[in-house]
Length: 230
Image (cartoon, rainbow, N blue to C red; front, top):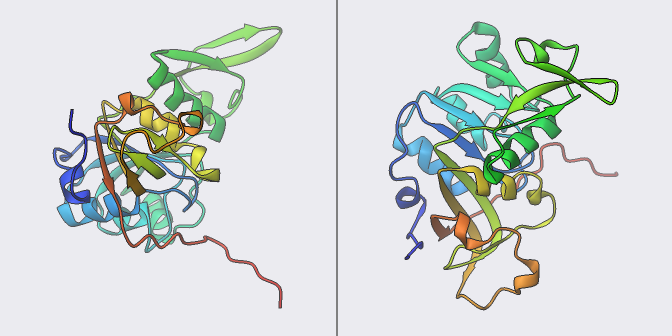
């Protein structure tokens, strides 16, 4: 199966209005920059985006929010985006805030074929409203369901043409789980190599989970809050 596509525009082919997308990354680290820009250019809208964060105003998912292409955000951290705040307060954007560990586990569960699980995180808060509660070892837990997504879009440090992926450092927080969970998984990589060139001991995502892969370009790799000494 030939998984290699030439660019981001080709990779996102088939993504249409109203779909649910998992978008990898942690803050601005390890986000699929090229694919996000291609989505912006495509004009697709009414998206539900599952992501650890909502980017910043002029970068990452923030670009999709600027174009009002997102109907709903499912995230655990959204504190760096003024446009996100405006849309939330005005009622233009649906938002589901989830504890960060729960977000990661709902992704992982989807990839592992686990339909639901119980966690104490969020019990006694708005997160628990309408959810089943059970007691385990004397502690109350709420039931969380695995995510369902049409596409997962991830960014890896290196990958091969069979779709095997290696993520770097903090980019491993959400990308590997999301790569397993999408009905169709798109991977953009900084370096694309031939099969056999990656050490199998360091592969984080096996190629069986990846449907499309391409080598990206012009990665900005921004830092959300740069702090330096004088």
